Length: 187
Image (cartoon, rainbow, N blue to C red; front, side, top):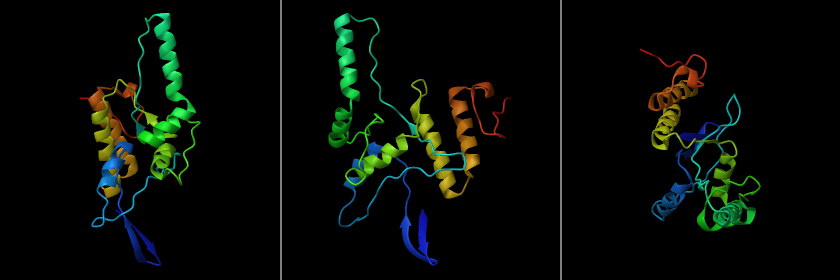
């Protein structure tokens, strides 16, 4: 929790919650007269090495390579339809889906929550399909919480996150890019 102050007098407490767009409806449903609060989504802060790159699970559609010419034509038409600007805007409005199309600009006054996630997505690192997302997200959540609570420095948390990923993926030092001073211990 962070406390904003003015002339050393506390103004407001801000709680950080790490979650994806799918959590928005759950959070909104908990706001009522007895539990009034406002929430928003903001881009992650820049660090000394540049913009933050949140992990981004991406939804994909796989099309079978050995199809008839007619099936290929239909599949291509579907793909073009799903990624065009008008459909991206419609998915955003009706389904609250963050647009993957970088040409879609999200008006933060009209869609403040989607806008925040859209800004984060511009610097995101897409999770490769071959990596199981559940342990990756769990390790990332632990790193984030460790830094916010003061238990680890950001550098220590990044190192621990990298070591956790290496452990559950069975990566060697040669297969990982870890921060300086962070090494996989082999027995």
